[in-house]
Amino acid sequence: MKKITQVTITALAIVFMVSCGNSSKEGNAAINDKKAELEKLKASKTKTDEEIQKLQAELEKLDSNTANTSKIKLVGVAPVTTQDFKHYIDLQGHVDAENISYITPRGMPSQVKAVYVKQGQYVKKGQLLLRLDNAIMQQQVTASKQQLEGIKTQLSFAKNLYQRQKNLWDQGIGTEVQLITAKTNVESLENQLKATNEQVKVSIEQSNTSNVYSDVNGVADVVNVKVGEIFSGMGQIKIVNTSNLKVVTNIPENYLTRLRRGSTVEISIPDANKKLTSTISLISQSIDPTSRGFIAEAKIPVDPALKPNQSAIVRILDYSAASAIVIPVNTVQSDETSKYVYLLTKLNNGKTVAKKQQVVIGEVYGNNVEIKAGLKAGDQLITEGYQNIYDGQLISTQVK
Image (cartoon, helix red, strand yellow):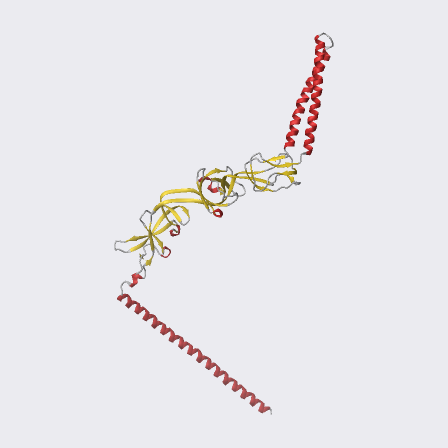
């Protein structure tokens, strides 16, 4: 039995070794086949490349213009001209009125007893708008007047007494002290009368502060107060006079030296579909510490369509040049040392090439740039296709 087992194990080992040998042989055969196929493809590619090169060489011999034509770039060209150049500062502004009055009480805040104005009503300067509670002040006026009448009575009596004492003194009757005392009483009461009379005037004036008047002509744009409420001002009544309108804008401080009174302003008010031309009438003398800007104003004509606080687009002319060289700003390119453009130049052989031309630029506004130096009227500026050309490259303006 033991012998049979050994024979079986030996047989199994022989079968396993044969199997591994066959597998290894099959793997090597697959690798060799793929290598052979790769070499075949490489040889085919080499042959194809050689045929391509051969055909290109033959084509160049048949058509000598093919090589040159492939290097010519198609471009767009425009002649350089002169024109008036203007630079504007584009800003946002708003319409405002020269006379806007926020009505306030002349005295202390007080309760409203009567309202004589409605919102939207036209009022005149000096027109009564409100009447405030003045009961206490009227009592003071009455008391002051009564005091004044009492002093007048005392003064009349003192004057009569003084005159009698003087008559006796002239007749040698009485003493000098009595005369002086009578005179002093008259002078003292006269002074009291003057003081009391002024006090009465003050009391009347204080009482009159209960009447609130308009200090300008205009329209009552805001009337936010009712009988029984306390009137303190605080924007409760607003009178707007639109007979003098202006546009106000805040300008960054870096433009301060470029503007002056009289500078031209182009104003557009989109909501009213209005376009106006004016000049700067006022420039503030200080810089706002928060916005780092200064205020400029331009007066505009009266128009029923224009209202205070309407938005406005403001263009302020801060630079202009007559007969300037002006080109599209996108045609100007930069390198490490300068700005340049490309011009179309004709060679002696009749061919046209791109020429790199250095330029000195001035102001830029919108899509245009002012050229200070480097170009002259009549130069042929390349305006299309300039991104992919180089100095001296053959160019064409026609499709061949």
